[in-house]
Length: 319
Image (cartoon, rainbow, N blue to C red; front, side, top):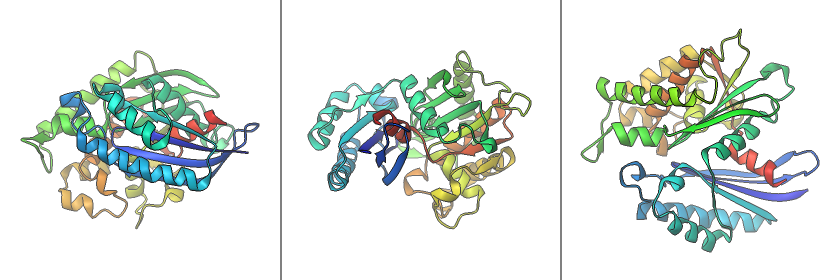
């Protein structure tokens, strides 16, 4: 066994997985998994730069993670940074800070690399299981970008597009420095139009239209916080429970009803939802709308929700 640590730093959150990995089988035995919402990508879509406050929040989380890595004795650490870091002019400031704290240089990976790691993490344990048979269309809805990956035992097509819950919220719902709460019909239509254009772009590489109808055989697998939060709401959980959410199946009707409810609700009403992380209260509406649009485009009657994603793919890559 090799004890590994994987860190995924995205636009909205930074997450850590420490696990014992078996190089022969690729099996991961999870020791610690945690997440903090740091909003590293705050304002990047508008300014092109990482804000000082966002950097400090991220570095504070890195200090906590460095302590966990030391305490658990991880032998190898891999740190990847995704959408926000790709877009920022001052990403070298971010890189230097991570190296000083964790002693490892963050890999600013491409969208296609991000897609492959997400696919591996989400589907490795599904392969060969009749209850979620492939081929798969894996959708990872992040803060700044969304990855689409299609494949069976391997990736056949992948595309990353610049739609995410944070990016679309900041682009369309922030007026005079404040988030419109709840959004207007025109704002919702503007988000939907952005999503549809991005789906058109993704479809140049990855088959989407009607790909997940029962007759076409693809299972839609959804990853990341927007999807898992919608799943938690659909399941009626009294608190966030990853074991209950992992591999749950949420129908198109449920996603449509929940998305409408979230877009009609106030900040206070969304904050009272038991499974809602405080850092997702303002961006969950846009995230749910992305998921709904994807399900409608692909003809999916349900989405299989996975708690295993890019972190697990990174862990397996180290093993």
